[in-house]
Image (cartoon, rainbow, N blue to C red; front, top):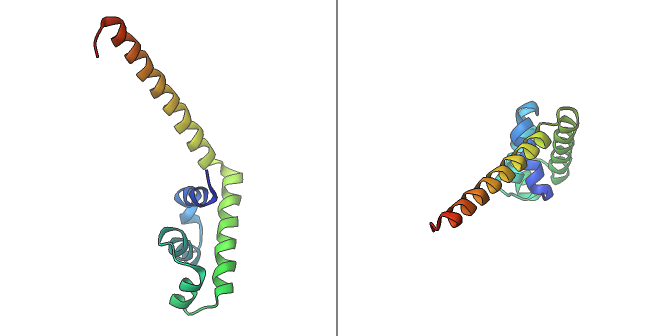
Amino acid sequence: MDRFAWINLLYDFYGPLLTGHQQRLLELYYEQDLSLGEIAAELQVSRQAVHDTVKRAEEALERFEVKLGLAAKYLADKNRIERALAKRRSVIRSRRSKLGSP
């Protein structure tokens, strides 16, 4: 999973634990795909202030994950479900081929 997808997943789990300002900046940066400069101009702050806040928010999300592990558990569960569904589909195909059904 790339960094962008990982931060978005962490935000889905832990976003409400961030400050309102951190939430807003991450939404602008990750969801609306605005650059740091665009966010800075919109909020009338420096690009460095936006960068620092985004970095602190990302670090906070990572700390929450280290302590709580919800995203990793979700991914593991999702993987187990996908494997079980694939096995189920394989069994169904096998049974159909034995019966001569398409």
